[in-house]
Length: 222
Figure 1 (cartoon, rainbow, N blue to C red):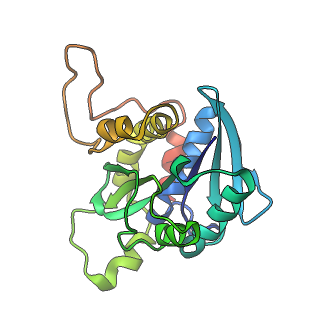
Figure 2 (figure 1 turned 60 degrees about the vertical axis):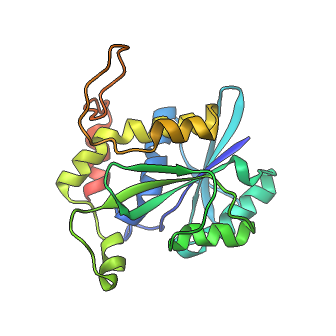
C-alpha cells in the first residue's frame, strides 16, 4: 500500500499557483487514471486505485500548506501506511521549471509544507518529489512568498503541459520500482533538449502532451 500526497493550498484563490504544483500534478495523474478526488473523512480530498497489484491512495490536504502534516499523519494512521511508502509531491522555487528531484529522506529545505509533514510524522525518512517552479530571475528574500503564490506565465504553463507525462511517469516509477531506480531515472531537467538514442528512448524535451493538454493549460495559467 502506498500514498501519494500532493501539497498545496485549497480554494479558488490559490488554484493554479506555483505553490500548488503538487495539487496540479495529482489532478493530472488522477485524470489519466480515470479516477476522481472526493472529500475524505478528514481535512483532505482523496482517491485510490490499484497498480501493479498494489493499492495506491492519493491525498490533497485542505489544511493549507503550512499544516499539511496533520492531514498526512491522520490519513497514514487511518490506513496504516508506513513513512517509506509515502511520496510527498511539492514545489521548489530554487529549482528551475521542468526539474524533478526525488529523495528518499532529508531535511525540509525551508519548505513549510514538508516541514509540517516531517514534524507530524516524527521522521525525515519520507520519500519526496520536488518540482521546480523557479524562474531565471534571481529572487530577493522578501519576494519569496509573492513568487510562490503567483500563477505561471502563459509560456511557463505551456512548458509544464509538455512534461506533465514525465511527472506522471515519475509517480508511476515510485509505485512500481525501487526508490533508487526512480531517482536515477527522473532526477534531472525535462526541458533540456536531447536526441533519442539507438534504443529508441524518447527525447528529454518531450512534445507529446496528450488529448487533455488544452484543459490542463487553462488550469495552470488561470
